[in-house]
Each structure stands twice: as structure tokens, then as C-alpha cells.
Image (cartoon, rainbow over all chains, first blue to last red):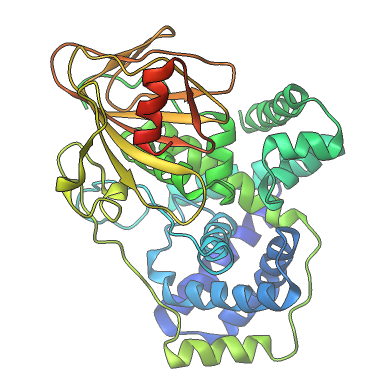
Length: 183
Length: 213
């Protein structure tokens, strides 16, 4: 991996820390310009109207500002963290359902994440992202539809005309490839 | 947790939870299992990372003019809510169940010594707690959709295997089974279905009607 790709992810973390520590609007604007249009696209692909997706993407970015202190770069990339916020807002605002979340882990005394752990996790996520981009397009499309479409695997099957077992095994194959790329 | 969890979440459940596409009843079962299972917690983090990278991979859609200013205004007004869950584990019930269990007096007998407590969700899949006395069988039944059963206390065995605390059984349309609670503790399960359960035989069918499923 080149340093540039890792640097991009570390820059997102620095921007988030600037928001957390100094309410830095310029750093927030950079995160907003990159992520808000992607969150909006994710929500529209999930079936939202452009208006609702726009409003929801703004809410997601406001949540990022308000929860910046909760981000931990040794546990998630900024892209993963924003995706989970967007996923949660979609359930709250668009599906209007309660959203059960797992218990927090009983961590010991809070310690700052180590720089090594953060770099390792950011590298792994970068490798994952590239592996995903390099999947054969049919496999990548199925994974995209499983995440973006409000579609179950059986609905994907009826829409694509593919037998369900094929969908499941293709998704599994794609995930195996991703895991393999991670090792 | 004294015994190791043997039966884990499936890929469609992990992916569906990560993507936010499951019915609320299934999300509740997944969140409860993950509260008990570190392996699935780690797997879920992976699926969320796949979601994040998938989101980066699609063509962005431009935000409206003034979206950034509008968002900063929202932030300045303190509009965005930061809700921190304060729910805690109660006995065998992990924290995600706390908002759904309003009253432990809500157990209702449904015949054969089995009791249930319906939990209310906002969509059509249904979820309930079942309490099966040690040594008792739940009537033979099949499924029209998918049924998830997560053990919270005790254990049950059926035609396929043994399920202890934290284990999840995913039953589909092809499956008929007769779960029997093991001797020892009463078995408490969290059970979710996205379609009515089909009971075989007249009495079990009446029992099914009593269960509201």
C-alpha cells in the first residue's frame, strides 16, 4: 500500500479530532464535502427521496460533530463510523423503527487508543476497500444491493432471476475473497 | 459465560443488521446475541466496515447549495440529539431487551406449561420470550418464513442439535422441529418470526392461536 492511501484515512481522523478539540469548522467542511454526498447517495439508493436523503445526510453530519468524542480510530475507520451513523439515521428517520443495539463492552479504565492499533486498523480497512473495488462487477453489485437496497436475499433472487442459493453462494464467495485479500 | 457458544449468527443476519435492512424483531435478536458473543461482535464490525467501503465506492450525489451552512446552523441550535443508552442487563436478559420488557408480570401461560411474553415492535415481524419448564417439549411446528430462537437461560435440544445460553437456531420453511427443554433450569428463549408459525395437529394449532402466531 502506498502511504497516500493510508494518509487519506489518517487525515479524516485528524479532521475529526480538530472538530472534537477545537470545533474546527474548516476541518468539518472537508469531512462534509467528502462524506455528505456519499451518505446522500447511500440513502437514495436505499429508496429515499432526494429531499429526505438530503435532510438525513445533514443529520448524519451533525451527529458526527456531536459525537466526535466517541470516535476511536483503533476500532473503526471514519468511513465505517459514518456508515453506521447513516445506517442508524435511516432506521430512525426513514424506517421509523426502534433500533436495538448490542451492549457496550465492559472496558476497563478508558485509555487512549494506541497509535499502532489505529494505523493497523486503518490499513486493514484500506485493504478491504481496495479488495471490494477489485471484485468482479457481478459480485460487487450483489454486495452493494445487499447493503443499499431494502432487499432481502430472496428479493434479490426474484429481481435478478437468479436462484437464491446462487445469490447466497456468490455473496459468500465475494466475502471469502475479501477475507482472503485481508490475510 | 461459562459455556462456549456453538451456534452463531448467519451471514445474511450479520449483513442485514450491518446494513440496517432487517425487521426490528430480527435486529433485537441480533443485538441480543452480539451482547453475548464476542465472535459475532467482531464479525459484525467487519460487515460494518464492508458497508462503509461500499458507501465510498458509489457515485456521490451533490448536496444542495447551503447544505453545509444549514448543517452548521442545526449544530448551533443543538438540534441533533445524542442519546446514550442507559439500559442494563437484568438477570438473563441482555441490555437490548430492557426497553422491550416493561413488566415481568406479563408472562402468559399458553398451555403445556409453556409461558410467553410478547414484545412489541414497529413492524410486522414478531418477537416474544418463551419460558419452557425443564423437560417440557414445545409442540412440533414448521415455519412459513424464518424463525430465530436465541437461548437466554437453560438449554433445549431438538432434532438438529443442542442449544445452550447464547446459541441461536435459524429455522426456515423446510424445517419441522420439536424443541425440548433440558432438565435443570427452565429454558428461556427469545424467538422472532417474520411469518406465522405452522403447528401440526389440532391441539397445537389451538395453542398457536392462543400464542397469537
